[in-house]
Image (cartoon, rainbow, N blue to C red):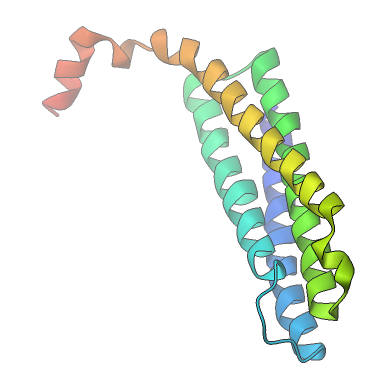
Length: 150
């Protein structure tokens, strides 16, 4: 699972960087100066794909996260982020082109499904992490005082 998280994080990094370049060049090419969802697509990919991926990779290493809940987190997180990111790119591109389709309720619904998936994935991550924290000796009451004096 660690390799999958690493690869997904690398892909989100590439998508985040590429979408930032696309935003800059596409708006310049079309002479667009207003607000567009393209402006936040790259930050979503980098913050939610890269940063969260790297943090979870570290949590996995430290706490030995495994199991069905953790695997479900991975797939649900990436699916939700793909829906959210794809909708941002689609809607933003339509906004730059001045299309009325940019205000489609369908796009809003897809983005909503992406955000709901991300929320459910966060719940799964906390459920996968909780038992590992309870069993971690460094977080027991008698060790907490020793850690505080360091």
